Length: 423
Ligand code: GDP
Ligand code: IMO
Ligand code: MG
Image (cartoon, rainbow, N blue to C red; front, side, top):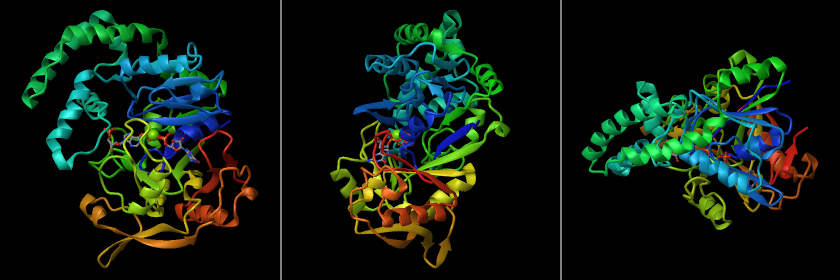
């Protein structure tokens, strides 16, 4: 029996969706515990591509229970659309998906405020996904948010929403933005509320019943360690705890019930949105983009790319308590002659072996690199550790050693079958 937290060890988009799909085979329940539809988790199964935003990636396997936990912020209209699209693709949804009563609801004024704040920030913008995530978590912390339990109570929702629209329209007018129509929002959200009502339950009780039965729970992290509101490159972060602790608060499962933490990381680094990225490199970005890779799953934006940063992943290992590593997108480096890995940061004569908190200092930091000879042969058909080129194996072993955790999964392509379990 193992309850497993899976987190992103970099800046998001590490390939969590793919690894969740692989690990779901031996899990009973998959839970999302933070973030919202800012997430985009891609899974390829037998040539079909699925992109999950709010629904746990475990939904793609039959007979698995999926839970959207209390720590998630849910845009109900977008969730309904996601369920419809999945159903159209032949995925069975009903009796296998549960939505927490206490998850907070993302409303149109959150999205509008998100966009307006970004405009106001100008060149200092965060580069958010404009899904209203920051303002929704802001309302939650300010204790002025609406929750799923309110959404599915028509009378209460109408009363609460009317006040919220009134208040937020004042703010939107001050920004010079269009105010919202209470009637229109009410109709749209009530319809979504009715659609979602059968999924809504007390997920804390549901999960604890599962724990008592001895079910294996897989916690599907969204975003990545350096987008964490506390541990990331603030303010260029998202608004939730993306690190392992968020899985407990966002589900109601206590820390001592967790058996292992798996950290997912790419064999290089990517980031979408603004903020420091010490190993950013135009050459590797051009190479990956020319291969048609590294475009955002949620917004389609080209991701910024750089070399693997072991200062960052070691830090991620520390704050998440990562036991095991899954390294993805190894095949992305197949054609590179000399592969660089960041092993330290330098600012003038000062050297760092950890990620400094001062954002201006971090932005100034120059990476100190170690170099590895590339394997320069295709890896996407390898199915076992032995089938990987010797140089690939030494590169991966070095990444794990520098990061400080055990390498257990190596991924050489987006497909389920392109997964190597490391002996
Ligand atoms: P997530 O947000 O962490 O789930 O990651 P995304 O789905 O946003 O981005 C990861 C991208 O890498 C997706 O397009 C995946 O299909 C793809 N991917 C994952 N693992 C591999 C791999 O080993 N090789 C290749 N070529 N693509 C991969
Ligand atoms: P997954 O789960 C990559 C980034 C945004 C922006 C910052 C804040 O697919 O890894 P937000 O909309 O959350 O207020 O944006 O966080 N971001 C992500 N980057 N992957 C994600 O999710 C992300 N979710 C948010 O680009 O820089
Ligand atoms: Mg993603």
